[in-house]
Length: 187
Length: 283
Image (cartoon, rainbow over all chains, first blue to last red; front, top):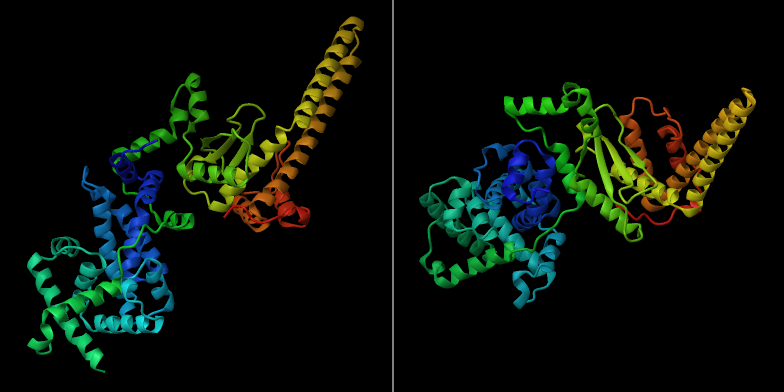
């Protein structure tokens, strides 16, 4: 049985689906967790994970031998997730109860300050509305910074932008969000 | 872009924004394993990799190796036993676990044949490696979950019946009767120079063979009942139909092996007693 990841990648690149299945087994759960954290919607996260693996399968021939598989896969996943989230216009959709309970199940940031469900939904809707008013590039950079905890250097790698562009877009996005959220609060 | 308000951009405001975004996205999640069906769905979308001309030539050579090699090497190639693919092994282990097979459980072998269209399972009464899946070489990675489960459960169920002491005794009895009778008649015939003892020996052999096949068919249908108990009727039925769809003629039968149409009729119809259908054990 093949165990070395390089060999698996090599076999998968030659069309061996069994080798690719072993790569899926090793990495899909982490990929799914990352996708779920970004979009908060389980069926969409599953689609994103599958789509990312499909893209990885197609791109295996260009995979640089000897480099680790997971960072490469995660770059694909983040790019694909951002595209899919824009395509599904998730920022224009209401917050679902399922989404909040999903976060609660994994120990949401509200743990120290227990809020009732209504308040949580209201707060999430405020942020979602504000994100919906940003432009797509600003949303991407915010999602990667806060939804994937990537550094500016990593964001630059994922999106293929110069680091300066990432910094400036991130700053502008934060600025805009601050204003939008303050406006929301005044209402 | 709106004008910046210096009062609103203090460190408190910044921290508030950070905390609200952090709350919105939530903490890093634990691993989220997906069900087997997710991989199966992805697998159906995996198109063949673009391969080089050299790799294509190698694949062609492996496919046609049996025709290219000289006769004395063909047996090894035709047998073509390869390691069991992981997804088949996983499904088999899951099934063994769920059907609570006694330790040590049976082991599974896989062989790939280019000339068959419908995957089949072969069970031998002896040895631990007594269940062998025979798969078409081009469809080794394209088995649907229900048909795979049906094949594996069929193998396990047939093995269960084939290794029952009563069945083994019956087989031994058949063989002994045929051997003894044939030997007696042949010796008697040689002594009297008559054709009749030979004829009786042949007829007796044929009768025993027919009885043996009838018994084998009965055992296969019993095994199907057990398979339905393990998988649930709808799953078993779905798997059998998927297998039948691969076949050009689903009503084709071989010696001692009923056709898929006949098995479908029994499993999906009403001929399997309903009291033998407990909860579904396998997804």
